[in-house]
Image (tube, rainbow, N blue to C red):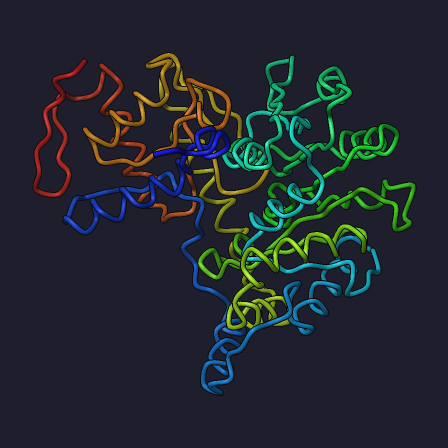
Length: 405
């Protein structure tokens, strides 16, 4: 069987694969704790459910415009004005099947084979693969100072004549690091100066902690005309706990949105009508659920960090936002894939190996679940790794004996 070069170069989504494995184990009755998922456990907003149900009850569920229904584009325009202080027109907006598709069609619209896309590392697992799907070259950049916070010079020294775009995800998946306003201002100015596309993946921008304020990258743009190469991506998946609804969007120049719409029209014909109406309900409805989720995540973050700091040798920086903690377990095992597999096999805890995000020796641990899951999950991990822990552990009625240390 002949497979294309691009097809052979792209790996599976590790995070989606872990969700699949977790579902299979749960179906078998295994006492699984899932600390690997990027999926809030709170329910979708009632306004989203009501709006979707109304359309379903009508029976009139048809094709939509490839770039989104007018009601959703209007809601996105209002959202953009509120959080980015930017007045845009419907032609500046595309609604997609998740923020992931919005980024994908943006990359397909701007990249040629061998172009390069720069993004700070650690990075979301899909950035390299989406870049490869365009025949382009991913260029992950680890901050030279060993932190999770890139500096402009980290990006600058990796720019070549092939560089076409920079992707910034802040707060960051997997680290939870929220980049400073100074860095955002510098990267916006730099990309304008170098005539590079700047994709701002803002999917977590309202899920931030410790009194931090949402940073508006658009305020630093000097050329606010239709020549701007700023692309702002967002969606309902994270802040509204609507991961399965698969609705995201991009705001950019009219010319670019038109090209992205053409591409999306041939890919999927547009996002689901029902899900778009649900997104309208979420964006236009009561917003208290976002703050409730944010507070829950901040509390869970505090508990997770406290538990991890009880480990000898584990290093963890408290995340500034998102629902992830990226902890350094290299004192126990430098091969993060091997470590994640050990924890899944021995104590039935799902984690995501850091190597998938560009930094081995780390595990990404999710704070999306309950406090009970966090406490019990970390207890199991500690038991599995720490030689000073008791030799036996009970998971329900099951007695485990540690025989691998």
